[in-house]
Length: 329
View 1 (cartoon, rainbow, N blue to C red):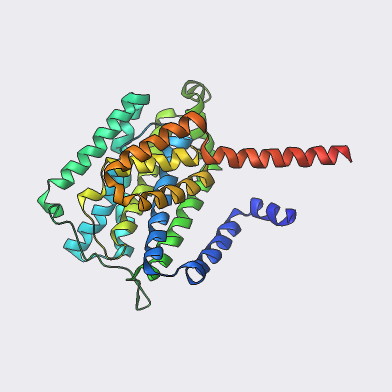
View 2: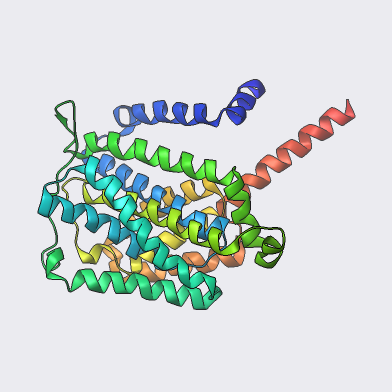
């Protein structure tokens, strides 16, 4: 078992291949109706958003509360390309990533001069400006939303039902998480962490703080864009400005805070749990903002490192006990 773990640590891509093979089998073993497949795709989409939000907030330490606006940009890029050009997912997905990355530049520039609550207000304003622009723009068909957005076709097979679309959203999610993992374990990830811990010391050591702040926002936005495009094409292929409100933003924040800022696997678990809770509390829509806002506050007060902190503590304790046993032999 230990040998297997060492191989996975040395070749992390193998771990993601194993995860892919396991997730391939999940629907046939556990799912009993189409809605469960639909919910699984929503979980995968939210994991992508959480992975991106963790880059800018968890790794680089920049406060942003306008991420839902970037998510909307990704969705409406895909939706409008379908509505006006008839484009499918294979065209709209890369386009949404590029367009949202450009919006990420606009979100990142204020971080050069603003920090903490001031940066939070700036990004909140940016996110709300995007939502209001979409809501009041005839170009976006905002009154009725964009409907009947097409699902992808592979080798003549349409992935137009929730059980089939699962096999589109799932690999995209794994690629996003792997990319996030690769960033954290690269020189870029180390630079992000340095900027987060002490930007003055980071600058003194030769790190271009502005460059890495901006890069964090761009990468985070690209993740949101990818998630937004996948959501737009999710059967039945319908998007509306009401899907991108402050409740969704608080939900995204709850995922990364509850999961653990800067912790990849905690963020994944947080996205899974919060998405399921969000779905279960839909009948209590008017209270969802309170529920997830309270979740954030309680997590910060009593579990500041989130689920990721418990994961780290478990493995640290395990290694410590193992070392003690070896020393006592």
